[in-house]
Image 1 (cartoon, rainbow, N blue to C red):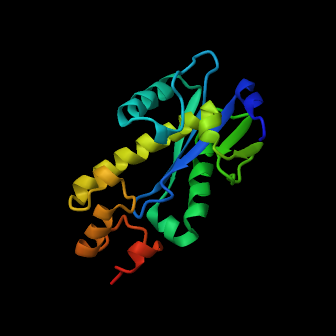
Image 2: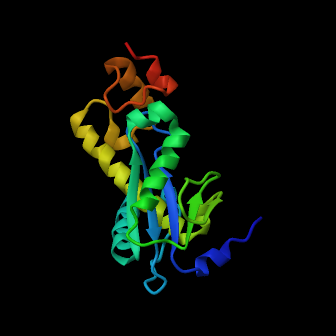
Length: 196
């Protein structure tokens, strides 16, 4: 196993992660975070391993204590046009390019890196190994979850506030009963079969 611990001792490392590759609806959202080594944030880990309440609190703390943070996104139309992997990389690229500081290195969760003008490394399970990536995963997840809760008000019968667009039984049943909305990904098989 590769030892990436040296990365945590480097200055101006931008951690990047995305949220929303698996859902049938909504955008894919990425975040980039440059942590401040003099302003330690405790409890950073993969956003999926945190409670909703803890994620919300950490997201606020990350935004207030980090040297820089930003969000990037790819919309449903872009996902359908270029596929979810390319849309995820596009969202990450947009997040990195929106940072207020120039990173010395970009570290990305997963197997793929966006095309940016910085030294970039992809780290599998990076959201559990690199605090900056953990921070990015938290900021991205909170931002996307909040957006899906807002969509729940616009499309109240789909259950977006609970499943956030993922293909749960509730969501699949709502699709069968009500059809698709503007925020559904038409290129995804469970949605495509309901296109009239």
